[in-house]
Amino acid sequence: MYQPNCDFTSLKEEIIEGLQTVSSEIDEGLKTLQNDNDCVLGKLEELKERFEQIETVAASFYLNCYLSPFTDKYLDLSTCVQNLSHQKHGGLIVIEREMRLDSFIRQGTPVGATLTSSLIESIFYPGNPLHDGAVLVRGNEIVSAANVLPLSEKVFVGKKLGTRHRAAIGISEKSDALALVVSEETGRVSFAMEGNLYRIVTASSSV
Image 1 (spheres, rainbow, N blue to C red):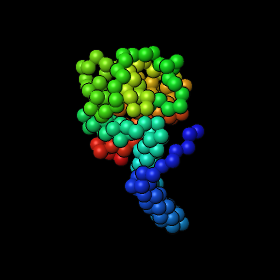
Image 2 (cartoon, one colour):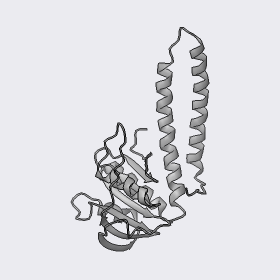
Image 3 (cartoon, rainbow, N blue to C red):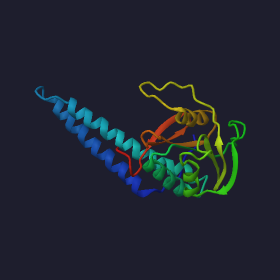
Image 4 (tube, one colour):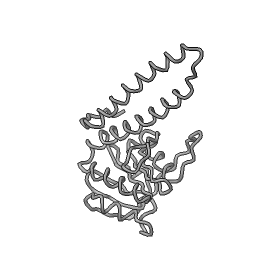
């Protein structure tokens, strides 16, 4: 697995603070459990929610870490998915890393333009003929749009995944690519890597 070199201090500090808080709450839960008259179910539910919050922030942190060695435009990508999330415009963006993706995808429409947030947002604007399918990013360039990705056949217990999410996972199963996906139903943003899907924090997220 690729090991990132990360220096996104604010997110890292938020993760550390969250883990320290959880550690303290676990200690309190243990004390509560030692008292036979107290119930820890409520505390366990709170801990579960806190862990989910920390996981979401951690995913955002590592997303930047994993993207930054392969594109200088990772902040543009972050801005893009934030805006798509806020507008609830579905989107699927595949960032090529060390492996070329030509043999894994069905090529769509060539773009060949410098990556900007506004350009990707316009591609995924509802009604745009290119909005179905994935945008392929190589370095700082949008190579093509409306690409068709392989769908994952993986079963996620308790989760109903749409085509975009299955495609994001599918390409990450077959290559080292990282795929960003925005749900048009909820506005939630996730990224797929190595066959796993991770939710990331956005300004409109409820974490």
